[in-house]
Length: 297
Image (cartoon, rainbow, N blue to C red; front, side, top):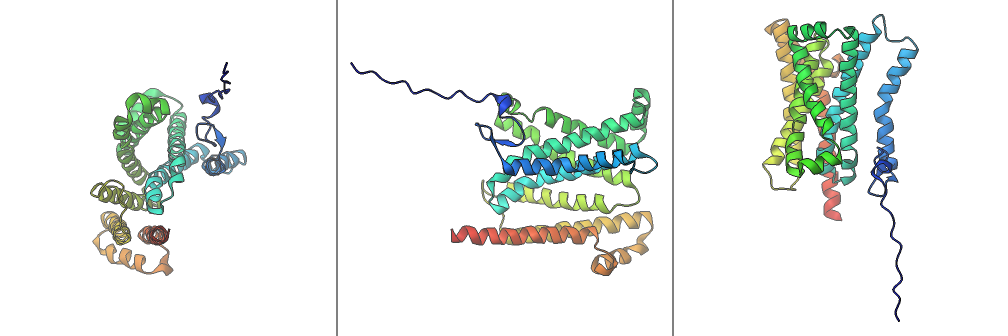
């Protein structure tokens, strides 16, 4: 009589044991790459906590915290949008592992930004509603935050299964208008120093251009290096034009030549448009190296 030995089967790892940000795969193994990204995402929060403990936030600490959490939130949202283009350009699939983590971190900083704003208003609902209605930049920011809250609520694997891949992807394209509204909110809020808002707008211009160009190409096809170079130049010129238009509106058309001169003379400081050009050039060079490596392999 033949006796078939039963092979003991491993019990699946419970979801709660493999759902930590520093874990990877169905087995929930530790990922040094994801752990390193998690530490980097936590650093701004730890830095702000340290400054709070040291009373290093100026005469209005809550206002400074509101500004800093909003700034870091929009920065990280921008980084999350860069993950997919860089994964495609550099042919480095593992970058996809951290896209959700970065997006959730960005949303968390922006939710904290809003909570701190309500705290600054003594959690007075009537006052908060009145302030938002009176200020366009607050309405714009609230619209961006609402979209991001919807994305945060549907960012889990369970919601992905419930919605289905196609509907989930369509819903999560809201991140692009949310990012645009967030950048607009930031631009309107700072009023005087528009360096960082312009920088963010320039990078968003590159991202939107990349997405639109990619949609015109066959599925899976990467953009050629020349297209990335052209895209970077276009985003930089758009940033310079935005800066010139802003100062022309605030001061007068006579200031436009001085703005253009400032962008051509690094001794006067590196302007946002130049930073966008430098970053886009770096991406273009990296794409060229990735293309060469792919052809040799």
